[in-house]
Length: 336
Image (cartoon, rainbow, N blue to C red):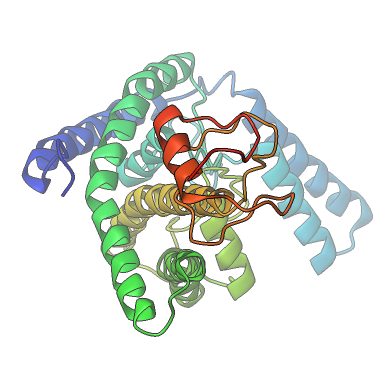
């Protein structure tokens, strides 16, 4: 553990505060959005859906021909576009008085705010909800970043441990430090991709309906990179899952996101550090041009028989003088 690094015992209170903030925000957002419009004046999104459905029914009534599958699918597509991501299936046409926003859906939405993923699968419709989202993000994002930084410090030890084991294993057979560093970076990258991308993508294909492996892998990258397009969203309500199972699923996805964001940041930081170290070692291999040019030689150690780029012998006494002065101004007439 690094000096000044927070322990898991110190991180736990921050995590608890974060969860309390998340659950409290979910409750407030649910309360603000539960009754989001006047039945006599529905919001534009709802009016747009009603217009699309009315037009579809009108066409069917006028023509007297049953709609085809393609027409029904087109209707669904238009409704989805009109909704702008809002899940309005829960708004029954028989009940225009309220919208029952599920608490866990509200919690899941708040999680996407503080992690800055912002899938866009739902959003506030009331003015109060919009104002609350801004305030919630303003406070919640810094708390989330602090938590990620604390957890990242701990998970960074895992990256360093893996890097150390790889170096120990390779150093027994390979003596080139540059090659060992490159292999260490590649191993860390493969492990990171497997744990947070390849394996989760496989799990998502088993849990989510009709997701291909490529779509699941795409979702993993879009999520952990916090791009969050929202075209694929895991853990949404499903007819194939009970409410309890879906709730547990949401928590698992939440933990995967939190750990994935911290571990990914730590692994990338480790790789950047290794690449910088490798670049420094490669630059140290350059032979300085010492013929007629002031060159810093204070730390230079030259083997016996070393020659300048002009082919002149460099004598031990000259090396000693360079070590004292730190510069060489040309000429090789220094006596032995």
